[in-house]
Image (cartoon, rainbow over all chains, first blue to last red; front, side, top):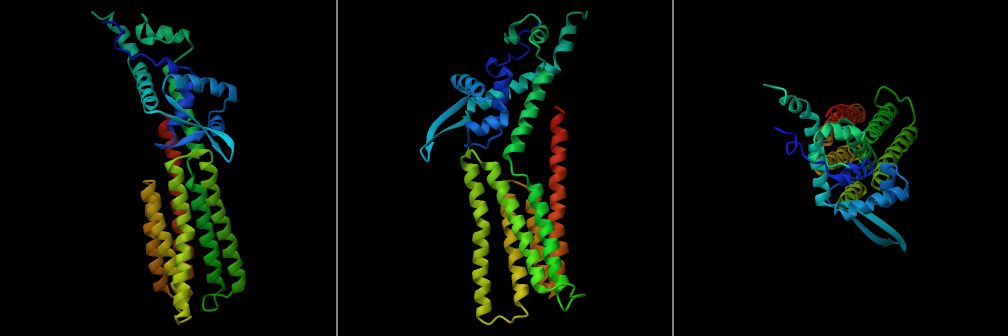
Length: 113
Length: 226
């Protein structure tokens, strides 16, 4: 018995810590809600450049929707987690828990008679 | 770099990357708590401030009543105490709602705004009805009981509504308790109604405040242990 196939793979898109944190922060919003860029920046504590880089990767993966609009003639960017983004976070958390729970006994299987 | 499912030993790979599931779960946990702390209205300062306002404001009216144990202070002074404390409590409530929802757009903001406006709307309606009754010749001795009974009915119902909207048992329980206190205040008569409002009404808010605080603390402890 090998470990391959038993352990769930980790989603590389949100495996990077900054993107994981952005995803977790967006998952805290209620269904149908979206948040402005500066407000999200405040919650995750990242620089604007850093945050937009990671948001672009999340958007490319289809995990985040970026809506650019105007409010009182000022451009505003709203962000929200997509359904697949939310599922990706759930799967990632499940995978981490599985990883935490299984490796030791599985590795010892090979030694057992 | 992170294709952990296909390596020969996933733990080895993740160790090389400086990754551990424990650390990642801790990152998720910390960021989740930070987001909740920033986005959710904290009921503790709201309930605490209203508890103090009822305790102090209505307590002052009880102590100012010539038919009670006092009077220990003038009625205008009691009115001033109540006015200042209630203004502070309204300010804390509005500030929480506005501050937490800034930068957020969508259904939750709409629900929050509609709920927030329900308070001035309901009290405007209550003033209209009560002033009308007084104008129609309601006996002056009964007027204070009308004010306390009807105000608590409105407050109780709005807390029931808040409990329903946010599935919050503490708010719902406080609403139910406030309805009981409203009826009791009318039965107590003047000036006993002020003592009931101060101790049972204000006390109800302070108990709800303590329950909300305990729930918050418990949430932090249980979530910290995955």
